Amino acid sequence: MKDRLVRFDWAMKKLLRNKANFGILEGFISELLLQDVKIKNILESESNKQREDDKYNRVDLLTELDSGELVLIELQVGGQYDYFHRMLYGSSKLITDHMDAGFNYDKVRKIISINIVYFDLGHGNDYVYKGVTDFKGIHNHDLLELSAFQKNKLSKLELVSDIYPEYYIIKVNDFNDLAKDSLDEWVYFLKNSEIKSDFKAKGLEKAAIELDFLKLSKEDREKYQNYIEDRRVLESSIITSWGEGEMKGRNEGIVIGIEQGIEQGIEQGKIQFALEMIKDGEPNEKIRKYTGLTEEVIGELSKK
Image (cartoon, rainbow, N blue to C red):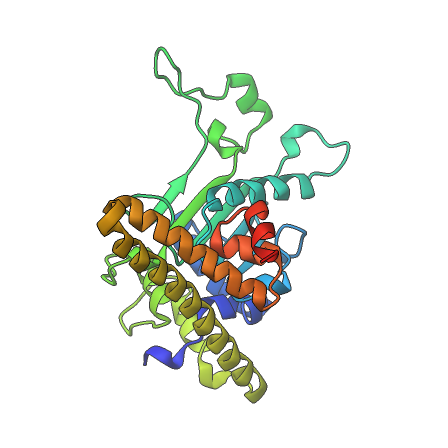
């Protein structure tokens, strides 16, 4: 039954922070990293605190593994043109937040940034991407490796890239619902809030039990239903505003050229959406995230 399980974003906010449910997150991370992991703690920091004005668009969870790595799982619904920059900022902030004064640089924590996005991020044909930092020779095209001395001093490292943040992007809406491996089974669940009876991926068996809507208390069921309704309104507003902008752009394209018309129409849709948010008293930060408009433009619109 598709609607029997609660959505993963709400589970991240309410259920997966419970130590008894670590096995669900451990399974997801293990399937993505292709290695067995154990969660030591769920952490809170300035990097992952949830703001009231972003509670339906974004949710994240910071975990510490037994092996020492910090894993930041972020789920984003609304589009954000500078999301790649946000990923970099988030991992960089975690490094500085968890670096004790007086420690040597070799104590920098390894950061793994997992980004589950429900919007069209970038341009590519895949639905799961991995990013690492390597140093490649400009002339000889060789990969810069650790020296023998470094390997001796830094015994836990094998590659230079092991030092730097590791990024994963899961573009949920680009998945075609054909689960060919265990990671696909997880992506299917992230997209459909459904776990098929033949799925064998780590953590999904426990998720099927612990994330059962009927297992929630009456109070949590009401909170979940309100959350889903708020999400639907938000997503509908975004889709409607952008769709109207694109349609207007297509109509204007008859006179000024289709491509230019679409571009102008989409921009007009952003402006119209921003005006509605301003009228509703939404803060500038939230308007900027949902529309991609600059602070200067939003300031001018606020004067109207």
